[in-house]
Image 1 (cartoon, rainbow, N blue to C red):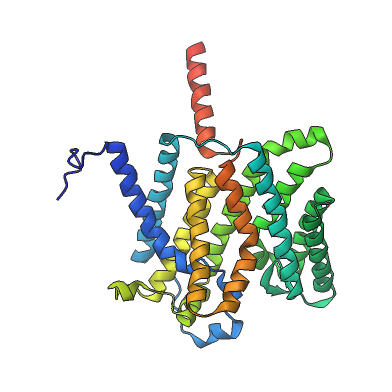
Image 2 (cartoon, rainbow, N blue to C red):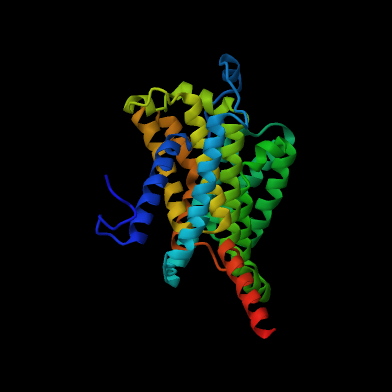
Amino acid sequence: MLDFSSNQTGLPRNTRCVAWVGLTAMLGVILASPSHAHVRWFVANDALQQHVIEPFRLFEPAVLIWIAIAAVLVAIAIVLDLKLPTPPIAPTKIRHDVMELMRILTGMSLLLTAYDGGLIAPHLQATGYLGGSLLFLQAGIGILLLSNHFLHHAALLMLLMYVGLLTQFGVVRTIEYINFVGIALFTLFNYFPNEDLRTRLKPYSVDVLRIFTGLSLMILGYFEKLHPAALGQVFIADFSWNFMPLVGFDWFDDRLFVLSAGVMEIVFGLILVLGVVTRLNILAVAGLMLCSNLVFILQQNKDAALMEFIGHLPIIATALILLLLGYGQRLKVTTVFSSRAQRAVTGLTNA
């Protein structure tokens, strides 16, 4: 048995701590990865009536344990962000190319989803006059993005379209795709026609994209997997994605699997919102999306894999931007704490 109070491993203490944190995070990723699919895309409303689902209760032991694990992981992420060196930002040409990729992938996703009658997501099917109008608006936005013309107009139309989605589908179903607002603001801040205003807004573009993406992950984790618990549990039961009994954990049932996946998705989202270890975090999220597509392919469910891939195109572009640019330039929790601490020290020194 290793004595962690000494250096029997021959590694520096910081290295060993990072290694154990990495192992803990890896476990969370493994538990969350197969359930990172948007379960609303694949669970029919009538399927919910065919299963008896036990909802999660706040004070049940499993929930309390996962809340504690989540708090520890977020705290570790904040500490690691203060300790780890900041990777350099990508060169200008690469930044330009990845921003172009955001425009192209988002436009493709909007066009292909509109072709199947969906608004932003496959399960949000256009109905009635408003739905038809939004469908044509979505296709038009996709064309503008792909043609690389009137991009600030496309961004404003994306925000207008989101208001229409709120009217068509209500707050709960639409707010899960709040990252769409982040993409619109990112595009607007970078392509605003007024140069002075663009200069002031552009430094916040990556931060806004990161924060809204994180909020979307948190909302999806809660409303698709934790409350109501039926969506996640029915998805796992129908697609048999709970692999834990296969590796010897027979007690790890579908309900606990969905709880684990939902909490980890919220953790990933919260870490994105805070702006700490952004590159590591978004790399894990990108890995989850890849795993969900691979599982569908391995199950010979090519239609579901294609649907998942098309729907995730804007998230893939977002992941690339955050991998290359990091948290952004302005809005980060550790930066706020550091600034306040520096002002406090300066005030004491002046006094």
